[in-house]
Amino acid sequence: MSYVICHYSEIGLKGKNRRFFEEKLVENIKRSLKPHFFEFVKRISGRVIIKLTGLTKEGIKKQKEIKASLKNVFGIVNFAFAENSKQEIESIEKKTLELLRGKKFKTFKISTQRSKKEFPLTSQEINEKVGEYILKKAKGKRQKLKVDLENPDITCFIEIVEKYAFLYLEKFKGVGGLPMTVSGKAIVLLSGGIDSPVATFYLMKRGVKAIFVHFYAHPYTNKASIQKVTQIVEVLNKFQFISKIYLVPFAKIQKEILLKTPAKLRVILYRRMMFRITEKIAQREEAQAMITGESVGQVASQTLENIKVIEEVVNLPIFRPLIGQDKEEIINKAQEIGTYDISILPYQDCCSRFLPKHPATKAQLGELKKAEKKLKIEKLVKEAIKTTELKIIK
Image (tube, rainbow, N blue to C red):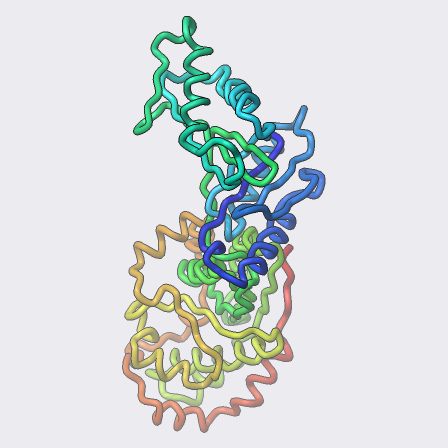
């Protein structure tokens, strides 16, 4: 196959901004593929096409790799490996017959999309002529060969667009959404559990570049959580090509909260400190928002009351794409995107350390601020930022 045709959906509704989205999609497709796999990637009427280099000896292997890469490019709804023909009905007929040769089927369908309206035949006329040609050539060889418009064994797709006449037999589903980075950057609070990677995926799908922050409590816990989040980011990185992880030591802050504040407020105070530190990192990265994996009622800190008092300490918007999902829905998506098996590996979460028996589920802002007067918040935040390690995943 000499071309790949990439179709998008939502991008086509962007009006005057459509070109910006298309060009970003082209850029991301180029980044996803090895340079020697293609001659060019360009946008043409309502789609993006990739002209492949000669896929000879390693053709199947290369095609599998291209397929695996394109399935992870946000913005692509579906794509197909296609052949190009002259824009003449005789050439299209012959090329269709070539594509079908060697395939086992009893019923077939021709499905044409004619974007170039100057082409002398309508889509329906092309369907009829090509279908008639196939039946004629099969006469005497395939007596049972029939056209079936409802449930054919095989469908030949034809696209007449600009100077091309593309033909292919199979479409592959893409991940959809918007091209990566068109919606800016956000900081993800990545715990190592099941939820936050899934939350990240949903915002990535909306074109948001994710930058990750992970809090760990060494020496009170081991460093297994760092290994976990690194593995998780490596999985998510297939969607955005390069990722940053800020690894924030949190043990000293936890110790201060443990010694100086009421036990029932402990987890909420942890979260407020995490949000403060994350906002500072967001400012450094010029990120426009924060992302969490919170879901209403899942744990004590995720009641509506506690969510409200936790986010009070920051000015950035907090995106919670899982807020109304249950655990089964989240697990299903984690399995789909490939993070679940890593997320369920045992590790020591810093927020679960020193967990009180009866955490507050409806904390009051006044009591939290009173408790925080015993903490040197600004100093603790600065020290945490100063000792944070930055890790790059490529």
